Structures are given as structure tokens and as C-alpha cells.
Image 1 (cartoon, rainbow, N blue to C red):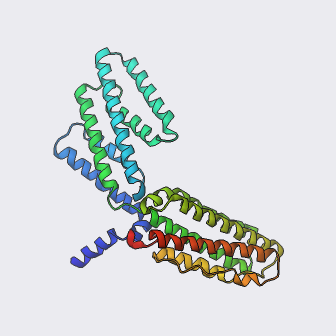
Image 2 (cartoon, one colour):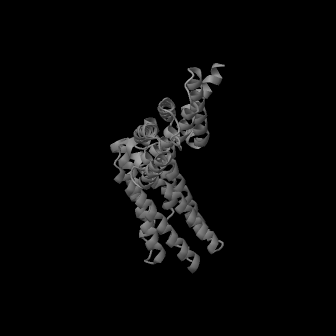
Image 3 (spheres, rainbow, N blue to C red):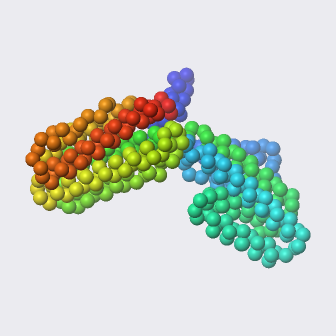
Length: 338
């Protein structure tokens, strides 16, 4: 029994497993939050407790990284508070004036205003405010007591959702490292395939598209990674730019080799550099001191391929140097910090 408990605990606190099975962890988190909401509202017999459960589903949202949970928590709280107060105000005016058409018009106007601001900065706050207004006020037919209980349910659901949002979150820094490592390994595969020649233009195009697809998600993680690690976002932007330049150089090399049948002049140190960086990022160990993968290329006669190979090798050396500096100055990418 103790062995099973230890394995379960290890699995829960294993960052790699949480990354690999992020959807399963998030589904479990949402399910447990839902059960907590039902148990709490049913156990103490809170009227309209189903709205707390609905709020849990609305608020807990998609999977959040540890680096942006606090910001999201603040946005959720503000949006819920604004929506609940506006919803109560709508019920009060309905009770006072007794004009359903006025209530409908105000409800539409308020939700339209929230929708206007839902696109852009603060959009999540505006969206939650609109949803909370409708949950609290309905179509204006509720009495004050019902509106009060719905407001209380919304706050209960929000609190439960926030508590479970912080439970075993995914780490953006870990995700960024593993995704960058995957991009580097895929780049190495393209470079290796280049030595033997691509079968046709479609294979080359598919390989380069795959590298672009792997690069895109990295940018979206940068703000959360910066908050988690304390590393300035500009540092990761530089690495993002370097990775993009490497992909462009690879594409030019592969295209020239495919179209011209040229395969000489490739630096064997390029594959080693890509592999070393990928291993360092995946294991959480500091990268080895940057070597000079372009040394073999420098002795070659000038030509199109050696020039591109030198550019790729130089950019890889810069990339390794940046990772090495982040490791020395900020303790990144050591897994122990996670």
C-alpha cells in the first residue's frame, strides 16, 4: 500500500508527467472542483447551488500555467465582482420600475458593452462580467433574495475554481524547454536528411512546415516563462529570433541542395550542437560551453552552401551561448527550480 501511495505521489509531483499528460491532469482538476462545488452547496443547502457549479466550469477555463495563474485569478475576481454587482442592480431596478422591456434593453446594452471590450486588453474580465450579469440577473424576473443567492453562488464557484487552479499547475518554463528541445531535434533530423537528399519537393516543404509549427507555440509561452523564472522576456525573445533564423538558414540550405544537387560543405558539428542543446533542455542540465560548430566550414572554399552552413553554425553557437548565460545568471534551465 505504501509503495502504491509513493508511486501515486511521485506521479502527481512529477513535472514531466504533468507536461506529458496535461489534459488528463486538467480534466481531473476540473472534475474534483466540480465535486467540491456540489458537496459544498448541497451539504449546507445553499439555494440555486447549481450556479456555483456552472461558475466553476466557466471560471476554471483552459489549462493555465503557473506563471499566469495570479494574473488570471485577479481578472476572474474582478470580472465576477463587477458582473455580480451589475446583476443585482438590474434586479433592483426591475423591482422598482417593473418594466421588463427596460430590463431587457439594459441587459443587452451591458452585455454588448462587455462584448466590445472582450476583444483586446482586459477581454477576459469583460467576458466574465457579462456571464456573471446573466447568471445573477437572469432576465430580470428573479426577486432580490434569489439574486442575492445567485451572487453568493457565483462567488463560491469562483473561489473553488481559483483554489483548484493552483493545484498541481503546469509550468510554462518546463513546457518551453521541452518544446524548444523538440524543435532542435526536428531541425537536426532535417539537417541529417539533407545529407541524403529529400525525395521530392513535397517532402522538403512538409519538413519545413513542421519546424514552423513547432516554433509558433514557443512565443505564446514567453510571458509566463518570464514570470516563473524571473528572466526578462527579452532574453527569450532573442532565443525565439535565433531559432527562427536557424530554421530559415536550414530551409535555404535544403532548397539549394535539393534544386542543385549540392551536398558538400555541411558542418558535422551542426548535428552535435543541436543534439547537445536539446539534451540540456530536456534534462534540465546546464548547456556545455559553446563550441564552434562552424570551424570545419571555415576552411572550405567559398560557395553558396558553405556560406549558409557558416550562418547556421554561427547562429547555433549564439543560441548555445545565450542558454549558457541564462543558466549562469538566472539558474535556468535547471529542473530543480520547478
